[in-house]
Amino acid sequence: MAANEKIMEVRAIENGTVIDHIPSEALFKIISILKLDRDPHRMTFGLNLESKRMGSKAIIKINDRYCLQEEINRIALVAPMAIVNTIQDFKVTEKRSVTVPQHIEGFVRCANPKCITNCEPVTTAFRVIERDGEIALKCRYCEKETRQSQMELIK
Image (cartoon, rainbow, N blue to C red):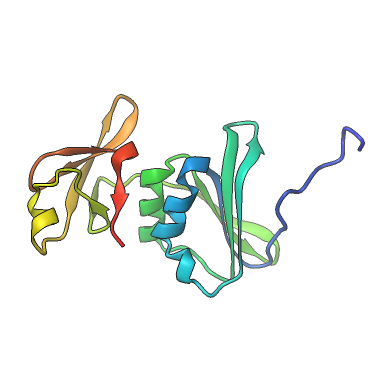
């Protein structure tokens, strides 16, 4: 193969969403966040793909589906470097960097097993903070910090 030939590892889509620059270890969390295991749209997942910027990365391509801002905010918790591209007629029409929200509710479990949210039917609520360059969540009820590596998504 000639040095100037490009290798395309994942096929282009005509319309839909491409989520790129996902850390490989976050791919399945994003699949869960977006409930892609139950989504009827055609999609492609790539894992451990080459990336000059990240070393290795994951990518998600979803045909004929567009992400809501709330979903993009959730993606930011597990993949703060991700880029969400909107595709129309095989062209990128919008490119959005994810932004970590200041507050989140209802989709991450508190790491404190004695927290009221783990014992009673109370919706979890957190303030997003940063600790040692990593995203962490501070529980509204018990004040326990849940680090990004500890985050367990609620189905």
